Image (cartoon, rainbow, N blue to C red; front, side):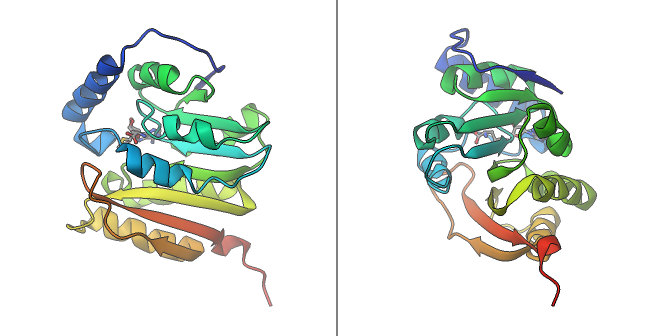
Length: 214
Ligand SMILES: C[S@@+](CC[C@H](N)C(=O)[O-])C[C@H]1O[C@@H](n2cnc3c(N)ncnc32)[C@H](O)[C@@H]1O
């Protein structure tokens, strides 16, 4: 996994970013999980979850071509950091243009806590994910969730987009169960029809592993 400093690259046109996304999606639906970037309204809805105030740490998993990243920037208070993790280098090129303030981490969400340590980030205030969770096997879901929980501040939030809500697959059911087991609080939005595919938003806090024993 490598880390790039924020930069204002202008190497990729908006259209090329979308084409790169579509080509990746067609090549590997399992790894990408959607056929189009997150819609602007869903991206803004996710970004509104970012706690206001200075010095916030926002982590984004599966940043892709930056559809959600672009909505995060206007929500960042002074001194805040946006760390965008993505494992496809070609998609990160588009993200550099859409969110030049973000610290791009080329790598796997499974290595999240080590990468945050490398960046000198103790804990994240919020982790926003648009990973294709339903396509992951249950072991991988749990490994990444464990990394998220390890990286979250005690009052931190975790939010995830869940695709294909109308057709619950084994993977999507397993992910929902893993969230219920991993967090004291899970809220699930109604279907967000502006997204392609339609999606729901899961918002979680209070990891059960941090439960205070009586
Ligand atoms: C559905 S796309 C979302 C892209 C973008 N955030 C958006 O909202 O349009 C999922 C993204 O997660 C990335 N991804 C999948 N598995 C990953 C992993 N284990 N670690 C990091 N990124 C991953 C894919 O490469 C893809 O860019």
